[in-house]
Image 1 (tube, rainbow, N blue to C red):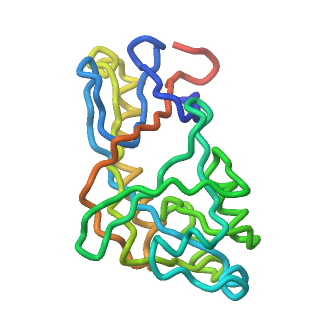
Image 2 (tube, one colour):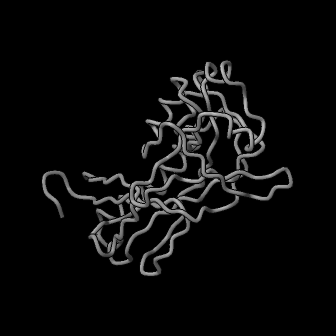
Length: 212
């Protein structure tokens, strides 16, 4: 079995685009599709030790106004992804924090942060190795809000195809385990609240040599 994957910030429509499945961060809203929860993810605010030595460590979200922030740019909207925090009383709130470098790729933001360009908020599983290696330090621990749920979406008829069913069951069994292994050894943030924004990745499964 071969899998063709499209990585994108756009909300792919499996029903309209002929995709076998889509992975979406945030609440699914399409009632035409079967939605099965894959996992929860959480985000952490990180910066390099060198950046923190040179600029100091912010202790509250309000302190970020005096720092270089590295934002996730969303080309489809021309805006930046808000950073979600929680106050001392646990109430969540959003901050828009564009900086001098804004990218629509989490790995690029991670590498920029590692090089001392500023502070970024990135999914914990993406930066886990850099944190364990001491290349990034987690900051604002008690202010980071719970992260969103991740959903696997597919059409009910598509699931009847053996190749699609194989793909879906593989994702359901392997992604939660892979996420748990990636996050092992890093103090987790409580996960309870889904996000309102959504990101989708579409996939088509095919047998090797020809598309089905």
